Image 1 (cartoon, rainbow, N blue to C red):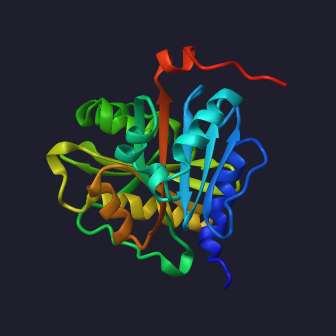
Image 2 (cartoon, rainbow, N blue to C red):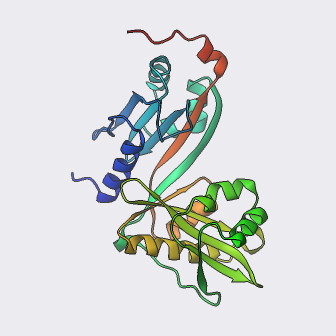
Image 3 (tube, rainbow, N blue to C red):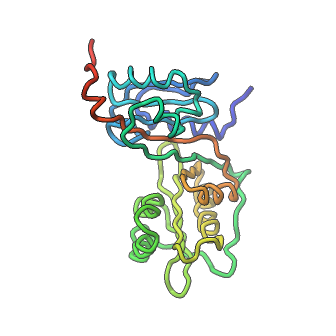
Length: 252
C-alpha cells in the first residue's frame, strides 16, 4: 500500500533532524540510534518521534542506547511517546511533551476568513509582539516562539493593540513550523484560527509543508479546524542523572 505523501514528508523531516542515518521502519517498530547532535530533543536527552505506526528514538551515547533499547522493547511505536508509559519503563528525571505533530497539504487546507477584525502584517521582532507575549505568559509564549519566526507575522488588533499573532519558522526539508499566540482575554473567539490560517496560506503559497506541533488540546483543535491531519507525536526525555552516573561507559 502506498504511503501518504504527507506522512512521507513528515517522516523525512524528522529523519533529517535526527542528524544521523535513520529511517522510520515501513512495517512499524521502534528504531533507536545514537546521535549526540539530535534535533529531536534538548542536548543530552532522549528524543522520540512516532509517525504513522513507526518510531525513531535518538539517545546521546551508546550506554544510554542499551538502557533505552531494553526499556522500550516492550512498548509499541505509539507508546514510546506516551509520557506515563515511558516513565514506568525508564528512570526519568523530566520530560517535554508529548506534543502532537500535525500536517496539511494544499488540498486539505480549510482557510478561515478574517471577519470583522482584519489581518495585518508585522515584521518578526516587532515590539507589539513582545507585549502580546507578556500578556500571554512565559509558557504559552514559549510554545508559540514568535521571536523565532522567519515569515511575516500575521496579526489581529483590538483597541489598538495586537491580541493574536501567527507565523512560521523555516525548518529543514521546506517545512514551515507554525507558531500561534492569542492574548488570554480574547481566547475562544476564533482569532487563533484567523491568524493561523493566514500563516498556513502563506506557507503553502511558498511551496512549504506546514507543521503544527502542539501540546494543549485547544491548539490541536485549531489545527484540526484548519484541515491539519494529526500524524503522530514527539516526546523528549531526560534520564535521571544518578542512574546515568552508575551506568558503564561505552566500549569498543
